[in-house]
Image (tube, helix red, strand yellow):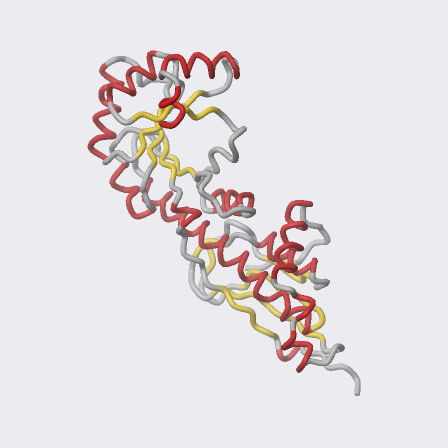
Length: 297
C-alpha cells in the first residue's frame, strides 16, 4: 500500500495549513506526553485504515509530520482503494512529537478520505447514464480546507468544478432578482468575452428556454426532481436548444440519489454533500513496538 517516502516538500499552501492546524492544537504544549514520556524516546508509527474506502489527504498528513519535525518513511497514493488495515503513512521521530501531531495528521487523512470515498460512490452510481453524467464538487467546503477537499473529490473520480467566485460566471436566483435574465446574460457576456462559459440557474422549462435563447452556455437545474429535470431537458431538445449546451443538476442531491438522475439527460451533477456531509473514513495511529528506541540511561 505504501511506497517509500521521497525527499519532497509540501507545497507552500499545505505547509501553511499544516502549521496552522498544529498551532490550533497547541502541539508544542502537549501536557500529557511531556509529563510521562522522556524527551529522548524515539518511535516509528503508522497511520492505518480502519475501514475500506478511497485514500486522500496523504500530502496534508505528511506535511503535518514534517512540520512537527518527523521523518516520513513511506506514504500511500492519493486515490488508491484501501482495505481495513492498509497503511497510509509511516513516520519516525521523537515520541512526544509523534503523539502531539497524531490527531492533526489523522484529522486531515480521515476527512479527505471520507470526501474521496463519498465521491467514488457517487461516480459509481452515475455509471450507465446517457449522455455520461459527471460528478462535480461545489463551493460548499469547510473554510480553509477547499484545496484539500477539491483534491479529495478528484481522488474519488469526480471533478472539482468552480474553485472560487472568480472561476467562471454563474448567474443564480439572487442575481436574476436584481437584473432581468436577458440583460444579466448580456452584461456578463460583455464583461467576460465569448470564450468564458456563462451558466444560468433555472427552475422551469420556460426559464431554461429563455436563458438558452439569451445566450447561456450552460444551465443549472437546481432543486428539481428527476421527473421535473427530465421535462426541462426534453423541452430544450424539442426547441433545438439542447445540443452544445451544458446541463448541470444540483440541490439536495446526495451520493445515494445520483442513480435516480441518470435518465435525465444532463451532463453533470454537483453535490455539496461530498464536502459538507461526507462521513470521515476512520484511521488510527499504531506505534511499532519492535522499533521503539529508548534513550540511554
